[in-house]
Image (cartoon, rainbow, N blue to C red; front, side):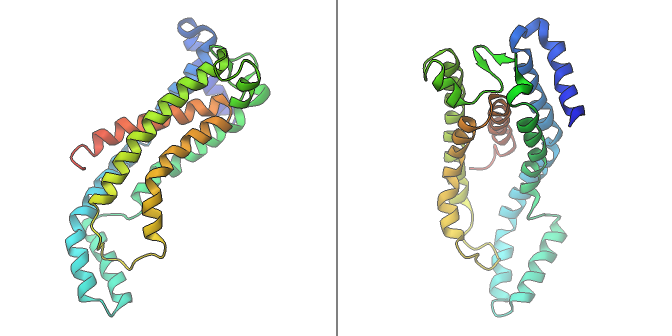
Length: 231
């Protein structure tokens, strides 16, 4: 954890001539981009996996018809097809899982007194949105910083909402696997999960909020590039 803190502090020192008092905030944004760049190969693999699963949908449907009365044989056949085509059903989860430690470190290391004296314009990096509301209100100097972040997150969430709905609508109804209880409800609610980021930005310290905003914005451009041939 100290190595992580030292890395961001060194980045902040390098950026000091360019960003002055916002150097630490800029270092957090840069660090986030480095993390996302590091996991980009996994995101690219996840995109290929998603496209491969869509391509295999007819074969999976055929397997389900063929082994309708043999659940275990169906499961084995689906696994064999995935192995043959080198498709992992869990590839899409890896990029998010690998980012979790970086976010947790950001949350614990750069909150409270650790961020004393560091700010993004008028908003201290260790403060929360509630602090901004207390000192100046929603349109005060610190509140305006959060308003900009909320606008960015809302735009990103809207993009993800529309894209997720389009992707779910384009997915075959018959995937070759037995239906999971509650899957229909989850699919209906999934597009709305994009807006949960607004809550996260409001409740975590500003340093962690910068990580979230940068990461989600990166995700929009990354997915637009990786899934440009998808709905």
